[in-house]
Amino acid sequence: MAKTILIMPKMGESIAEATIIKWLKSEGDRIEIDEAVLEIATDKVDSEVPSPSEGVLGKIFFQEGDVVEVGAQIAEILTENAEIIEDSTEISNNKIEIVANEIEKQVETIVEDKPTAPLVSSTSNRFYSPLVLNISKTEGISLNELASIVGSGKDGRVTKKDMLTYVKSKNRQPQKNETSPNLQKPSSISVKTNAEGVFVNNGDEIIEMDRMRKLIAEHMVNSKKTSPHVTSFVEADVTNIVQWRNRVKRDFHQREGEKITFTPIFIEAVAQAIKEFPLINISVEEDKIIKKGNINIGMATALPSGNLIVPVIKNADQLNLLGITKKVNDLANRARMNQLKPEEIQGGTYTITNVGTFGNIMGTPIINQPQVAILAFGAIKKKPAVIETTDGDFIGVRHMMYLSHSYDHRVVDGALGGQFVRKVADILEAWDLNRSV
Image 1 (cartoon, rainbow, N blue to C red):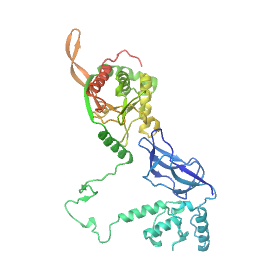
Image 2: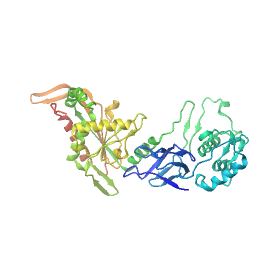
Image 3: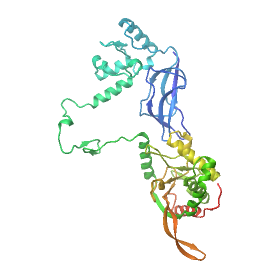
Image 4: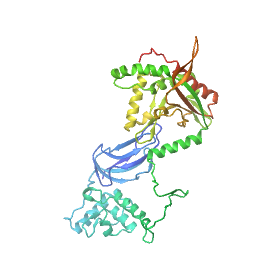
């Protein structure tokens, strides 16, 4: 019998492993060529893995939630004579045993430990695969109990996944000698949830982190452990930028079919400043500093789920403002629809985040490792400010904004970190009101 091995695909240059989110097919299910078999996720993006051939899904080597290395075998697809005999009340028990024995010989990869039990029926005329019976025997599940399990396979067939779900839920049920919480009437119930002593009270809700939130949490903790963070603050007068954008945004939208936001302007300014301060555009590996040849600026983007992703504008210094704007809008839109490609969130050398979008005047952002700095742009607010002119100083209403620059103090000292953010502010303040886009 021919088999096709399904392997964990490579999702990008720096991706060495992926997490299996969900199996879309169960063992024994028929699969068409290029049909999605499972969903996987890296710390970058989620994706589906298609079948390279037509056949029947044989043995699955990894379960949902497992972290698997790129190139590892994750399943087998049986491509010849791999039909699974479905349940049928018209087949006699003798014939079922013959068919089951034949299946054991031909499709031994569908079961984990090559069980000796054949396909048999319960009193309800349901039939079970050797793997299901093996799990039933191991977990002490009787045939009558087995008959009560709702199957998700074809024609209601009980699958391995159904069995594991049932066993898991069964083990969670309170024992008979346990007191039901519904029979207790304390004013406040405290439940210990883990070994660290976390308690919850009535009205509290425990929310499991999703996969992306776990990755973000780990990434942020590791960043703080890796880099001693220092943050410098600068206030910039961006009145010219606000007035210029208000003047051009309508014509720009009519001509290009999309909006021009402040983010492309910020990215352009950062790219210019990096050219003057290239030692901000570095990473650290042990005791070595890697000076980056390209200026690839990541932009932190909030997702509808509340999570965060950082698509990257590659070679931002080589794009004009129109090119940056189109790239920013495209990446931001596809990020929110979970349509980014792995390479579009890799290779960043410096990151910006616009906390002003949420009405925050400033923030202390955490460095996106292995980079050494990140710049946060705060909300633009009208404020009274001193205006210096050749005729003297005046008080006027200006559009002001705080820039918060966090950097890795192992390799970026206060002078460099402060000069860089000051340079970004100077570029923004010198904006040409007559500039075309």
